[in-house]
Length: 365
Image 1 (cartoon, rainbow, N blue to C red):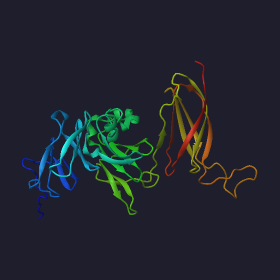
Image 2 (cartoon, one colour):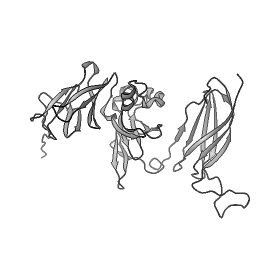
Image 3 (cartoon, rainbow, N blue to C red):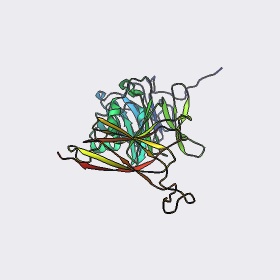
């Protein structure tokens, strides 16, 4: 027979536990549908022992508490429509102050400490998008704090009644914040929105049914991202250049470009693409002009010359694996706005682009 023992003693009148956090050597918890944070003495799990206490956070109009996060010596308390800072090291010093009113976190599973070029930060998700706590604190302008502003169209297309099922992880090895979400019309998480804290760019991974997502240390000591799906399987990311031996499509897409003059029409002539030689395969390129004209090109991802021993004197160029390749492609069409997409759908064939240069002329008004 199996017997169960209670490891903690809840505070008087508390029958549920929604959130739990360890902060400054104390255990903190929040019941379901509550605006009260409870703490136990030292590292005890007994919330009825001497030294326990509770703190009411914010105003009822701000909704219930949705997240707790220990960060740089303070406890961040997220509500549905506000964020508060709980400071102090002892019960006599504990104090709560509002940080932001009008913006909160949907779920504790999206609140993560991240590291990037601007230092340590906290990311979280509301129904409006992904936010940076630094930006929220500094600007007090909710739009200015949107980390997800570049993919706002994608965000607006997510299934709204499943935003509370999002789950996130920050992986310091690759410097990325991954958020599992549900696309519109779907019934389960099927996408990962990944933000790189160094480049400031987003990558969208499709077809990943991540119910829960987190880090795990591998045999080399590196942190790898793992996710669990609804069928009870666990998957490891960052392994090779295929999806369980199958090919997948990888796309790099620019924003709409107007080169500083959205009012003028440009005639496109050529593109010079700079890339790292990866092998004897082609990269597909699609460009759209004014959301009307669509053209498709291909460019080799092979080297730019021959290696020593296989070149023709006076004809071939010497090259190596570290050479930057370049390819000049002819373009056509013209318009005010241009967008490029670079993609490959071959298993085990990755590509790396350094940039591109465009040749165009501005037409008369």
